[in-house]
Length: 407
Length: 146
Image (cartoon, rainbow over all chains, first blue to last red; front, side, top):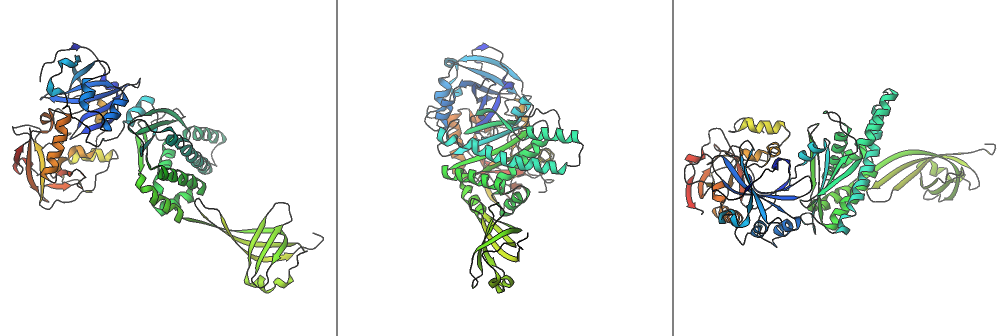
């Protein structure tokens, strides 16, 4: 390879965290990395021989990368006008050892190490952040929300579109966490009191997240559980993240929606529905990914904007039926003895009301009902609800017994 | 999916054991394929990305972010698609010929060669070679690309 004039320096490239490969063909050719301080670096492949691959490393700002990806600037302009006025050069061998690290002035870069002047971006980036590196760094599971779609650029999006996302996701988390904690506690109800207290504490910390940072690559929100992980086995945090991701996956199949509804309840699905509706309205896609280096767990799912309509249809098709028997003491205040329609209201001060139909047997003796008497009635209530719709009650009165005045 | 017939079955099995998944694969039935190669003898000719030396990798962590595609060979369905890709790469990386080859070769893939992924919108697909597949004897250089 060519000998390039420059100053020898040391630079620990190994500490950088990969955001994504911007150009990839049988391996990376242009990759975006960030430092712990948040500086952006592009690794630009320029040459190789039998021993090394040679990379030019450029510290640049995110706006330059955005402009390049938006085809508003060339790679040539990024490489030849670096922030620092110079670039780094490094030769990397097959064992990923760094050799010949140098600071290079642009004027000393050979022409074949520079892109063509019309080097506009014509590729699709790989868009896969190194969550494993973040998980190792924080010794914790990491949950990433990755927003893409209309008006979302590489690392920025309008605040009015971004702002509603966090409370909506937090609403889903909160609803899911409440039910999840109840389910786990139910399973452990026979455990020792101390164990139960410890489980309660772990559950609380494992199912709540704290914001770590935001990162580029469209928009990425990086979260971690509040709990400090101390073991290398799976914890509630892994299990809960899996449940979260399963919830996001569920909208694609009606059976999966039913399963979530059975395991949790429709309030969780209602919040999920609201969020999918938001993605649909704003033409956004969202990826959700969990990675935990300690427990070697990794789950992910992506909701494409184009799938949101189908998910909303699936959710709206699901009806949640519940059947229960109500016993109410009260008075009839309207009755149609021909059709069997009635209105009944509790006299116990609990504001219970029922509107419905007498069953066939009660209809035949409806003439016996008096509006100034108190009755104990049994009502069969069938509740039907579609997600995002109001509850519909279907009441059938199946017995009434007059309450004697002494009672 | 049975991966026992693949040339890099043990490497692929390691990735599957880590939880990675194979893409949907089908048997090629005498389909033309185009690949970038080096016109002069080169150890990396017709070698998957992860087998090439020196491997194009930047940090140690990148070694843990493998996917099965790294053990497959990149192919294009049409000459025009392959050339278009090469031209795009060349504009951004002038020495691209030193990374992926300087020539375009053509061959016809059949069911004895391996299994292929779906063709993407750039006309690109991956070939997961069977153990006895030898593209060096099958693919012929059609034109220079530099």
